[in-house]
Structure formats: C-alpha cells, structure tokens
Image 1 (cartoon, rainbow, N blue to C red):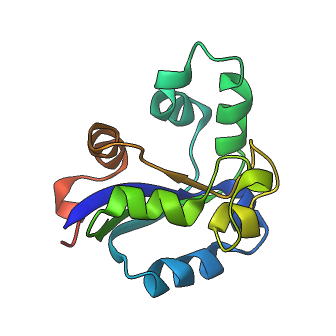
Image 2: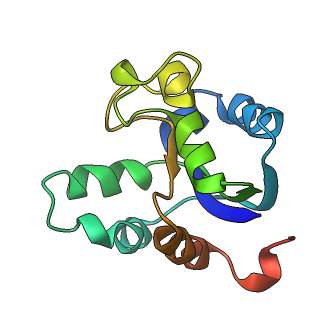
Length: 138
C-alpha cells in the first residue's frame, strides 16, 4: 500500500467541514495511519512550503496556513497519491470536477480546503515533516 500526505486546511476547518472531509476519506477507502490537529506557526508553514519560497504567493500562502487549525494526515491505499489528488480535484475549485473535495468545500485557489502530495518524494518529505515513524499506525 502506498502512503500519501494530506491536509485539511484552515478554511475547511473554520467552515466546519473537517468532519465531512474525514468521512469522505473513509468512504473512499483510505486508511488513516496518522492524524493530528495542529496550529502551524508562520515559521513552520514557511518550512513546509519552502519549495515555493520564490513564488509570489508564498507570503499569502504561509499566512493562510498559519491562520487557524488544520488537520495533517497520512493516508494509505493502493495508488494513494493519485487517488487522493483525484478526490481533491483541481487546485482552483471553480475548475475542479463535480464530486471532488475542492469543488464542494474550496472557495478559491488560495483557500481550497485540502492539500496532498504530488509524488512519492514529496510524500516522503511531507510525512516526515509532521510525523515520526512511531506515530504512524500502519
């Protein structure tokens, strides 16, 4: 089984949609092997999104991600990375397919309810950023 990293972002948490997103994760056949509710500091958000440091949206992104609680998760399933990205939908909720999480719960490109790793290498970094091996329940 492949593992991927996922976040329920502050906008979805604030809107009361975290439980609905968690329910969809279970309904779609993912196994949750790690889960934490946390508040990212600005510095933690900057470290997590360091790959985007030179992009014009970096400050806005890290401000948003440190604006309230979020849920970070490690999900497992066959083809988990693609499966989670398909369930999330396009980055822009207006362009996301019907039935995707971003279409249902996102409001803009910047506040699009969820995050997910885009490749095995990214998943490995993102998982290790938030979880030690002892915290993952296989």
